[in-house]
Length: 187
Ligand SMILES: *[C@@H]1O[C@H](CO)[C@@H](O)[C@H](O)[C@H]1NC(C)=O
Ligand SMILES: *[C@@H]1O[C@H](CO)[C@@H](O)[C@H](O)[C@H]1NC(C)=O
View 1 (tube, rainbow, N blue to C red):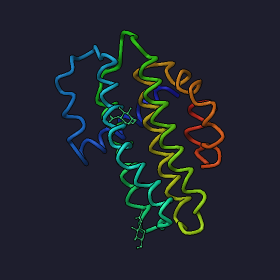
View 2: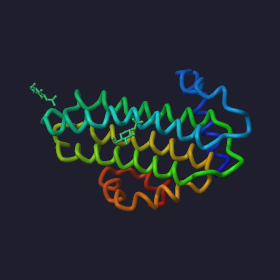
View 3: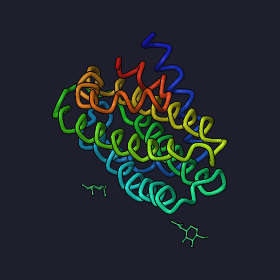
C-alpha cells in the first residue's frame, strides 16, 4: 500500500513538475536525505497564503448572493491548483529521516483544512445556483487528499495528529462529501 502510494505520488510529481517547474525549483537547495520540517512548513505556509486569498473571495460571493458556476469555478480552480502545487512541492522533498516538530505542521495543516471546509460549506447554502458544485467539491477532495498522502510519506503518523484537531470539522467534511479526505484522515 505504501509502495503503491509512493509510486502514484511519484507519477503525480513527475506530471506536475513537467507541467509547472516553479514549485520544485524552490527546494533545490534543500540538502539531500535531510528534510527539516521547516521545508514542509514552507509548503504549507505557501498553500495558506493562497487559501487566505481565495477562500474569502468564495465567502464574499456567497454573502453577496453572486455564487454561480461562472463565479465559483475559477476560485475553486485556484484552490485545487494551490493544493496540487503543495502536493508537487512535498513530493520534491526528500523523505525525512529525523522527526521534528510534527505538532506545528499538524496545527498548520488542520487550520488550512478548517478554513477550506468552512468556506466550501458556505457554498452548500446556495447549491441550487451552482449546478457544478458537486463536481467542483469532488476535485477539491481529490487534490486535498493527495496533499495529505504526500505529507504522511514525509512525516509518518502526522495525519493522526491532524485528524485529532479536526473532530469538530468532520461533520462538515461529510456534508461536503469529502470521502477521500475523510478516509485518509480516518475520520
Ligand atoms: C492566513 O491568515 C491567518 C488568519 O488571518 C493568519 O494567521 C496567517 O498568518 C495567514 N497566513 C499566511 C501565509 O499569510
Ligand atoms: C454581486 O453582483 C452585484 C450585481 O452585479 C454587484 O453589484 C455586487 O458588487 C456583486 N457582489 C459581489 C460580492 O461580487
